[in-house]
Length: 142
Image (cartoon, rainbow, N blue to C red):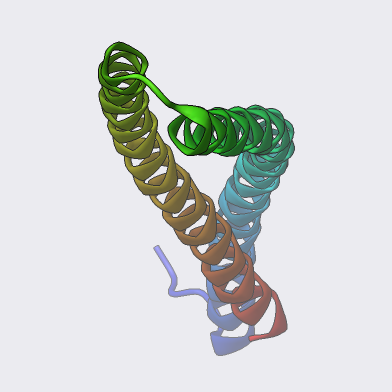
């Protein structure tokens, strides 16, 4: 059996390398498509979170207005109290409003923590997608 000429050997090696490169390119394209889909999902999730945050902000504003209104009502009651029984009743309402305000305050702290965690998650997801896209683009340019 005779050996293949260097040109044939070189050609066959190039064919193998071309096949391998095409296979890798197909894998990279597949990864890019997956990352683009994940990025789209992250964007959709971020939009949903924005809507949710807006609703919570409206609810928060309403609750804050209610708290201010109740605090003003309590102040008016305290200013207008003449008899001790009315004063005692006003003090009880004030204590109830303070307890309610504390509950609302606790709720708002949890809300703000959840909002911060959601924003951090969205930021990390977006950053990860961006980094993956950058890596994929580098592979395409190499």
